[in-house]
Image (cartoon, rainbow, N blue to C red; front, top):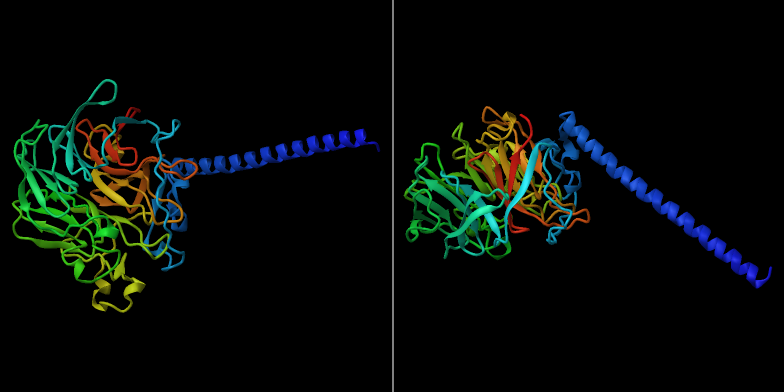
Length: 457
C-alpha cells in the first residue's frame, strides 16, 4: 500500500472512530437524560399519588427536592453515629443564573418583590400589613410597604439602626393596634414606641432585657440569633437562645440551648424549655396557643445525624442536648453522662433532613391559599454546610390536623441550587402577608420573594 493510500485509510479510520465517539456520547447523554427524566417522573408520581418518602429514602439531598415531594422521617430511621464521615461542604453562593427561578407547585406563582438588601434575615408582618425585616450584620431593621402593579415593593425604609445583630421582631400588645416593636438583639431585648404606619422609629430603643447570652457565629462565640414571640394571651414573652458550642456541656452553656420566658416588661426570667440546641425560629400557634420551635441540631455524627426538627414546645420539657438526641439516644461524645435524664427526653414532632438549618417558621392564617393549607406551618431551610450531599435550600410546609403535626413535611419552594451544586439562594425568614401570600427572605441573593396562589381552589 502506497503512502497516499495509507493516509486515506487513516483519515477514514479517524472519521469512523469520531463517529463512534459521537454516537457513544449521544447514548451516554440520552441515558443520563433518561435517568433524570425517570427521576423527575418518579418524583411527580410520588406527588400525584400522594405518597410519602420514608426511611432511608426520605433523607436524600437537593437533587430529589421538588415542590410537592413529601417526607416522613422517624427516630427508627436514624443511622448509628459515625455511619458516615462528617463533611465540610460550604455553599458556594453564586449570582442567580439567567435561567434559574424558585419553583413552586402548579397554581402558585413566585415573584421577587425586592432585591439589593444587606443580608435579609427574619421577616414579620405588622398588623397593618407592613413587612419588617432584620438585616442582622448591618444592625438595622427595614420596613416594606405595598406591592405595586409591577410586583415590586412600593416603599422601602430603614426603620431603626444601631442594633447588635438583631434577628427576632414582634409587635405588642397583640391585636390590631400595637404600641411597641420588640427586637431581639443577640445579647438583649429592646423595644421601640410604635403606632400603625410608622416607617421609622418614633423614639429611641428602650431596654427590656439587658443581658441574655449573646455571641457571634458559632466558631467565634456561639449561636447568635435570638427570636421573640408572645403567648396567645399576651402575658408572657419567649426568647430563644442557642448553644455556645456544638455539643459541649461546660459553664459557657449557662442559660443557653433553651427558650427563656419573661413578662412582657422583661421581668421574672424562667427557663420555659431546655436541651434545645438552637431554636432559631419560634412561633405561637394562633389556634391552640402552643409555642413551636424550628431547631438546628448538632453536627459531627455523620451526614444523617442529627435530624433538625420542628416541634411544639412543652413547658419545662427537656429535648436532649447535649447528652441525648431525638429521644433516649445518647451522644457518644457524652457516653454515660446523666443517665437520669435518658427517659425524660421529649421526641420532637417533625424530623427534618439532617443539617438543613431550619430557620424561621410561621403558621398560615391567610385566605389566599387552598383550604388544605389552613393552619399549616411553613419554615425556611437555609441549607447545609456540613453534609456531603446538600440538604435544605428551600421553603417547606408542615401539615397540621387540629393544631397537631402529622409528622411529615412537604417541599413547597425549591430551585435554589444549580445542577452543578452551586447555590444562588438561601431562605431565612418567612411570614404571611395581610393578603394571604407567603413572603420569604433569602440572604443568598439578598432578596424578598412573594408566593401567591393564582390557581382554582
